[in-house]
Length: 481
Ligand code: TXE
Image 1 (cartoon, rainbow, N blue to C red):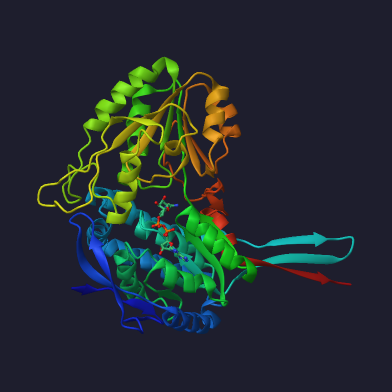
Image 2: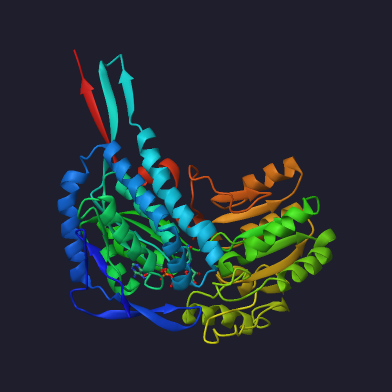
């Protein structure tokens, strides 16, 4: 059976304890690899390597760091097919999705930050009256931690480590134990790209032990984390007394607001994606759909018809719109919401059943599911389900829908469908989310701030925001005569 190894100080190695965890292929429900069950001692070894490497990496020229990031991107491109297959097998997502989104986006993340650093400048403030000048440097922080989730494994892993590395930090990174394979393959690519030893260290293992050891380590100055809100709160409690810098990208319960004056066909097509892409396991999915009353019945009918036509099947099948859910545990969590649909204040309109895929009978497949709810207060509209499950509800006025959209503890993203510019401006200004999409969804420009408000987290990733996060401003004031 394949063994994934840690990447510490430039070498691939077994965990010190020689303890291993099972890694599942969710499309068939079988273990296909083992991953290190790393402990504190592995994290300690990685931190020592990173501290040593920091002395040189932090003073390596921007051109050289940028060149190495481009070489890593070249390495991902050269291994595209292998990485696409690995991502799909580890996560259960359709091959086509991994090939169109996940792995190409990992390439873009490295290329984007390889270029962004060359445009990231310092500020100077001259004060002629007092004959002094202040200039503000952006210094790398030292050793930083990057912890990523399982829904977009290499995509989100690279989204964090690329800006961390290019700013001159040395990194201790942990991918999700549920989907560790592409991060492991990335370590081989980094070796070949000539990334100096110890600059990036990838330590595999459980969140509660390996992840916890990273967060607790006093020499790790910053943590960039994407994952569940509960875990984010736990990390904050540990990190706060050590004054660590934190960037937390957490859960969402995003509204998708549809007005009767929208481009109906486009809206329907995109809403199908924003509901069920990646089996609904994207923090940006629009899981609460609010539809203006005058088109509610029409939308309900059309949306159900389109949803029923989606094909759930093997990730390897090019016809599959939805693949497998990421794990048995997550599959059961999502299913439990559906099984309690009436108790939780909803009515099942379509889907809701596990799917038996021929030849993959033990895989974790679920029908795309639409639930009608009578009120925004219900559990189904207030808790992040994070699966192929959306709720539907009509509204009558702008004020009413805006209040419902904002009456939730999350605030990551929102989508708005209307052709009325004034309304689009009014509502996008008033929505309490970090990201608003108008007449589009998941339309990403890597220069823009990415992150949420309320319990969706703190800080922003993307563009110069991530470069700022991974650097410490240092002001120097000089007076002259
Ligand atoms: O995430 P966890 P889980 C949401 C989604 C999902 C819920 C729980 O609603 O149902 O979170 O998912 C590491 N110290 N999202 O439990 O545990 C863990 O090993 C340090 C939304 O799978 O938060 C993994 O690498 N690290 C989300 C990472 O945290 C710890 C994407 C995320 O796992 C840790 C995923 C600890 N104590 C889930 N405990 C999004 N925002 O996109 C765990 N980890």
